[in-house]
Amino acid sequence: MKYVLYFNEINKEKVNLVGGKGINLGELYNNHFVVPDGFCITTEAYDLLMENKTLKKMIENLNTIDYRDTGLISEAGEKIRNIITQTEVSESVKITVYGAWNNLGANYSYAVRSSATAEDLKGASFAGQLDTYLNIRGYENVVKAVQNCWASLFTERAIVYRNKNGFDNSKVKIAVIIQRMIG
Image (tube, rainbow, N blue to C red; front, side):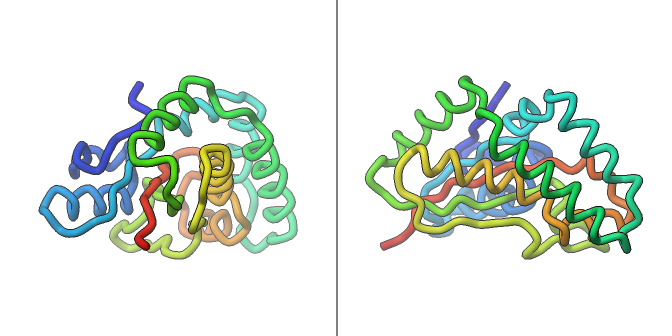
């Protein structure tokens, strides 16, 4: 399992690991544009979270909710987000992320940015639906922001959009970009 890819390791073939934003940053970086250093926590880290059978079933059940029933969607999404943010991140993921974060510099502030595998698709735009956290300092705060990014995949607006447009909630995955802030 590859839980972290640095920008120089990312190319278009890795879209299922790093999502749309991750691919674009990798392409910019590898074509020598000025891009602040960073790495991507891959969808394989998110997959470990999805090994929770209760969580997986709850996400599958989202597909059966009519997108117009925002009350039910809101309630289901909140329960899913709570599980995601309260579940301990896998030790192997935490160790890998710590190494990458420490390698880039523990004294910097970071942007922690969601990058879903369903972003920037032909005929669908998920722009602005997932969370980004800025000026995050300290390893524990980075990990918490990663969990919050994963959880943002299940906000009411994101679920409604997927259900309305026929996207299977259990098929969409999320990677998280950790990028050094400038200044």
